[in-house]
Amino acid sequence: MSIVTKLLHTRYRVDDLERTVKFYREVLGLEEIRRHKSPRGSELVFLKTPGSEELIELCSFPASGPVKVQPDLTHLAFQVESLEEFGKHLAKLGLKFSDGPHMKPDGGGIAFIDAPEGYEIELIEMAKKGAGY
Image (cartoon, rainbow, N blue to C red; front, side, top):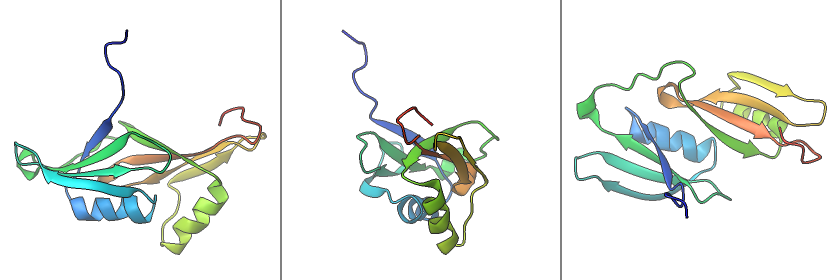
């Protein structure tokens, strides 16, 4: 028997909730599942990635002060079918990769973009032969 049974969500606190929700919806294609206010007054928005059960919780809680994300503190990683195609999608939105893409000979690769508040997003294209990324 395991002590915990499932990862439900990961929370990121943000200063500008609407700007960040827009980024996750328009840039990454996540779906907004629900919104509510927590008992301590946080504004919460839950987002879902197609193909995943775990949610991302975005939280606005101005009383705790401005968000200051340290470099390389944390990131979310999302699988994409093609880093090249995702790069074209970013260009249409006036955005670009902050690092990469870094491709491997087997076709897998990684790249990064910066989300609002300074959170880093890793994008992974799996190797064509299923060998990883």
